[in-house]
Length: 508
Image (cartoon, rainbow, N blue to C red; front, side):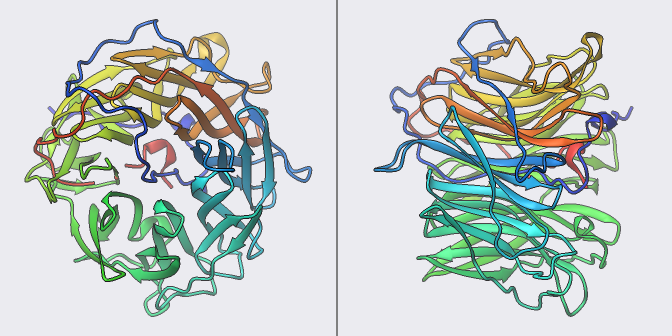
């Protein structure tokens, strides 16, 4: 008997112009690494301290509708730069790139204009609260047509001029979706652009080596994608780096009507990145969707997602492991009582231990999948009565995680509002209240970004619909106690192979 395909309810769907923020930047884990230990899954409980601050939504220049926050980077104090967060997105009343700066209590929204025209920011990396790099794209009505990349320094956002090979600049269809950095002068970003010679969208990588930016096409093997819209073309959506000389970029490609996940391995040698791309090894694949990937600072990675197969069960969840410099041979299968799990995000704090955020079932139950050395354990984190899913997860240590999701509890007069949950030493705590703004006029609030510092301060970003029509970008500060990792190294032998997923709520 076939298992129903995983899907979030239609009323969760964001406007198609919103693309999910995909992680992530590399950062050292500052919590103490002490005794070698193992992780024990514990059911959700009502213990621990989760403190949620006030959610704020934003207007800029008198325009307060149709905005979204899609990426957040929170950093501790570094030298003379104070601790703080930078969030990016768009205020779509005029399609202008939105930037929100925060010291934890005060949030200030502004525009970061560079090229002019309609632009969106989709991801941001900050080495300090005053030194950042943001990436995004120009809408088709833009006259620039080039990749959209901005650098923040001395309070000013400045554009970086990049021209990929064979790019069709007249339409503005160059999209950077994700950025990861080792430091402010060593970065990679991924996306896609429309090629002039055949009008197809092709994946590409933007790299910054020793302070100098460059671009490269990364064309998948066996791709026969047509020249349709950007989200029907080949693209790289997410990347993560297990070392300073190795990075993994993942996305999707098309061979006729078949959509299949791709994994592109990048290697840095003599100042140049080279890339090798292959399809993820998924048996009986008929529709590959996307997949998500995250890596630890000591060389371990986990990629996960879901796909449709030609034989039962037709809806499947999978995870792929990268360890000791190689992908393991076959995917790890996991589900929840026979139902496939849709994976939206993954965080790997130490080698062998990763946490996946997602949902399961036709009525969308929110779940976290805890992976310990290749063995998955599913933890239910439902809040609402009628449909729940998790979209963002961040784990500063192996014992401490934060997740953001959406729950629907129509019985209480609330529809699709954001909620938060945290994990401390094996116990998950769900925030007792929904994250609301403009109550009692709240109709919807949805998370699209999450960032946590090693001291337990976090910022969730997303959007809030305060009437039946208008959306506003929003941020929510919160904090919880951080428990140190108890594994210093090792772990990670678990049978997988591969890489990134866009939940149904965010496809388009």
